[in-house]
Length: 100
Image 1 (tube, rainbow, N blue to C red):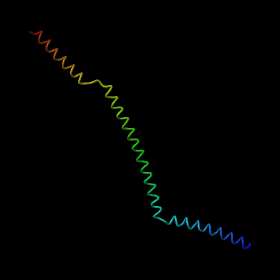
Image 2 (spheres, rainbow, N blue to C red; image 1 turned 120 degrees about the horizontal axis):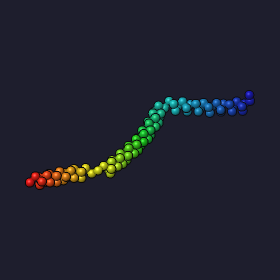
Image 3 (cartoon, helix red, strand yellow; image 1 turned 135 degrees about the horizontal axis):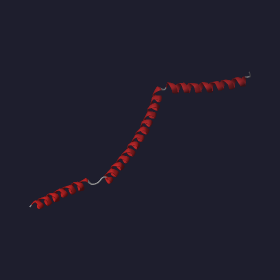
Image 4 (cartoon, rainbow, N blue to C red; image 1 turned 180 degrees about the horizontal axis):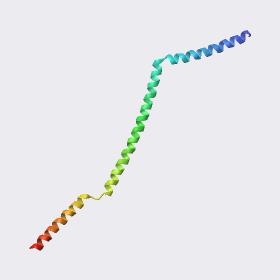
């Protein structure tokens, strides 16, 4: 091996060693890794909260639609009760009128 080749090999080795040291330093930096993990968890929690909120809104809209539909299809019960009352009074009056 010639001197320039040896010099190039040394430079390549230094670069690889520098990259390896940077990787090891990043793994050893627990504080930075904890911050990154916390930021990731916060983003996931926000995403899940938004999904849950959207599901709740959809369910609430469906429920209010079902309530409106059931209110529209059921007969108005006060009218039925009033009709039955009037019918009973008229029947009683007719029955009483016939007896006298």
